[in-house]
Amino acid sequence: MAVYKIVEIGDEVLREKAKPVKEITPNIIKLLDNMADTMYEANGVGLAAPQIGVSKRVIVIDVGEGLVELINPEIVEASGNVVDTEGCLSVPGMIGEVARADKLVVKGINRQGKAVTYQAKGWLARAFQHEIDHLEGVVFVDRAANLRKAE
Ligand SMILES: [Zn+2]
Image 1 (cartoon, rainbow, N blue to C red):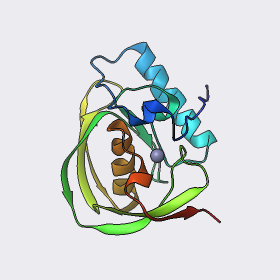
Image 2 (tube, rainbow, N blue to C red):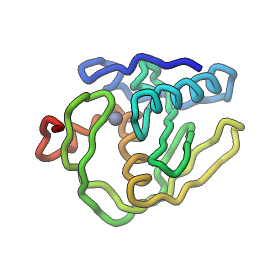
Image 3 (tube, rainbow, N blue to C red):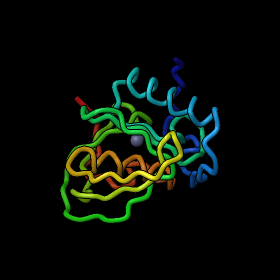
Image 4 (cartoon, rainbow, N blue to C red):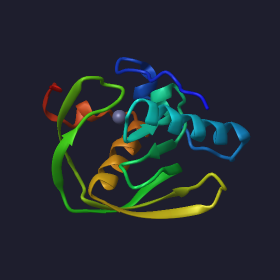
């Protein structure tokens, strides 16, 4: 078990387009394990690899429905539109309103290298969009209205 330091906005790695994972190596497994540890330690609901300084397409999410780990995630369908409040572990203390699709189909690969598909709605759909944005160098503040300090 290991906890990484979370990089904060202003760090270049958060603005890079992350690279696809070509092969599931022991290092990728370790990355997944440590990313989950880091997310839980920080009381977050999601974490993307660039947030710990690793520019690879790897995300972890837990919105209270269990741990989701996804490598090379891709949104293949999106529908609906909902505005809700978001924050980000890389932008401590700030929140804002972000419009997101309400329902998604997300594809990717799991730690066994198998193709997996998630049907997501609500908070899970929001978390997927937020974390996949990180892989494109997009931070929620780019999309947020009424950006403000959390109380
Ligand atoms: Zn974030």
